[in-house]
Image (cartoon, rainbow, N blue to C red; front, side, top):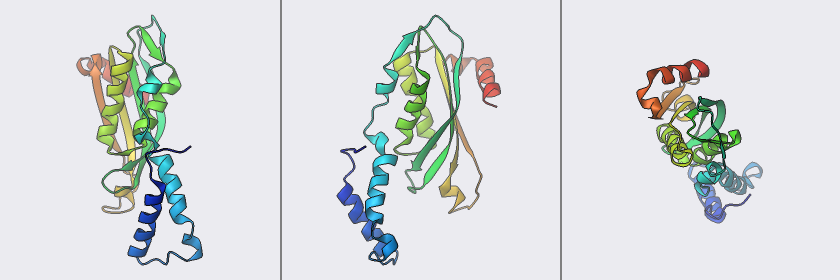
Length: 188
């Protein structure tokens, strides 16, 4: 998969400069293909920059059901925009339909689209909720994300295993604490 947004040649030049700057020999065997590999990796892990999450949520189905739909433990991988190191974890999404539902894979694809950008977890959580509200027009949505940030685990404070939890509520989830509590009980 190739994305027009990533300039592979510039990425390769930047990687060579970076390796030289940290004192590496860019001509040693183990590093010869590293600039190309990093360029290819960027196409994959930053692929969400060129995608539009609405593509996934535009396919809906009519539904008379109005109970909570919850998809939990959606694995995500992202890159911290402050340090350009990964953070990863699980996303949990619930919404109350108002006449239409999305295919279950569409929620996971929405998470992936926003996660595959330089990102902060707080913003990522809100973007997912807002996109669901915009396209499904449910009565409400709640998104919770649990992430481990390698900028905390392998550098800085060096606290591996520390989880950052963010959540946002929209619509009926904002006013109804019993809905929020139901969400938390199911996710638990």
